[in-house]
Image (tube, rainbow, N blue to C red; front, side, top):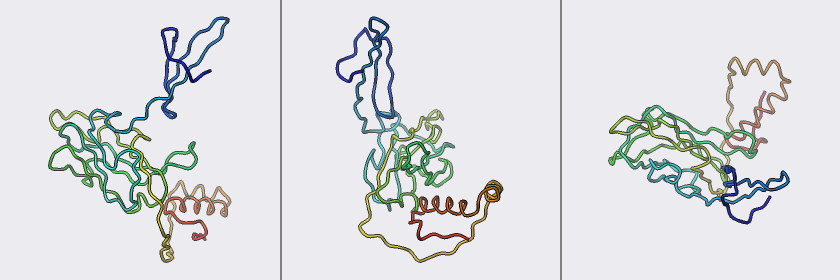
Length: 224
């Protein structure tokens, strides 16, 4: 295994590791030995490099944003119409093996989004709670069919996860809100888990999940 050298005709297999942005090749050697060559791929900084139908996005890839941002925009290369696909924002989990935390989602035809006067720029509103976790990383996932071409009604491909990533900057001072008491109703699935589990463990797990979503320290939450 090596990271130096260059690919040539003696390599009989190639593939990429997208998660670590690396290409590798396999070269057959004598005596039943294989040689692997790994090379880092150049980092792509524009969504247009992943999706030719998109001219630009705002905020840009890897931008550090204000948590109170009001909207994000996608500018396409052709006139478009909103359609049934979803646009969603996820917060990356600290544990890379766990799925991201969904912060907001709605479909293109939900009337929350709108298209600018140029017929190419889609404006997507941001809820106040979406980017409320300071010093965290998020990504915007745009499904295929979020928009269709205005001329031919053909669906356009979206933006895959972990491409359009954004980070929130840390707050200068932390401000705690007043305490609130609420009532939580469990659905059928939640009720079943409640009766099957130890109640103390159930409440502990619930508080941990709420602390991530709100966000707030676990010490400020209680349940009974």
